[in-house]
Length: 216
Image 1 (cartoon, one colour):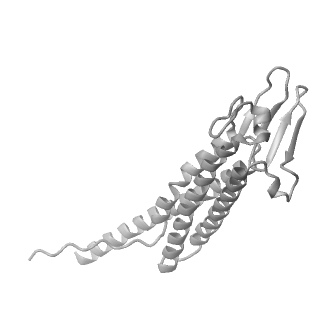
Image 2 (cartoon, helix red, strand yellow):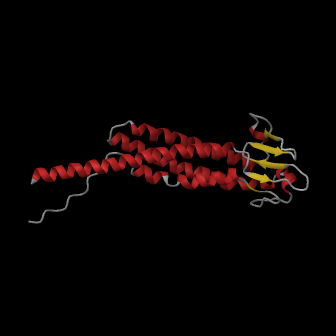
Image 3 (tube, rainbow, N blue to C red):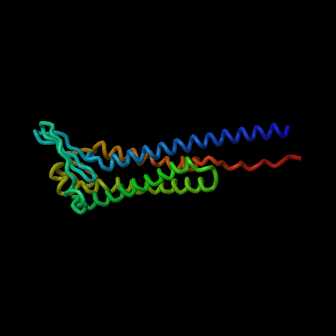
């Protein structure tokens, strides 16, 4: 009887370990995918866009780039002030947003590397501590990138944006509209909210439940 109970407990333990391993793999895949989404949206020039109107070129703005498409479909993109001239980004709000978004992306990338490392670690305290650290880093990345996205619309009242978007102002795009790059960044941050939850259940080692008291 005891051997049968022990065997059932071992089988249950293997099942739980397998479940936690699957959660860990999903956590790693989602973390890596969100790093790619974050990086792609960060370099995207389509955070604020203006389509062709009254025989004028369409324009779009990102954190680091601005692009224009002529009526003959010639597409040109330029960095603000040229590469390496961060101070020439046209708004201090956009400069702050660029720092916050890039910092959040970097933190998310490091946490993703830690998540990959846990796959090759044996179950134990070291694996659990690394998962916990990565989860905290991902939580911090959410707040940092979210802050960057909230700060970005404050730059819509800059002289450069108003020259293309008309009477644009803080959180008002005027004749322009929100582009897919900004929306992609928002979706990425919203999905990143789930990563700390998966990090909690990612370790292969599971804690044994508290045994029930034996009835005499």
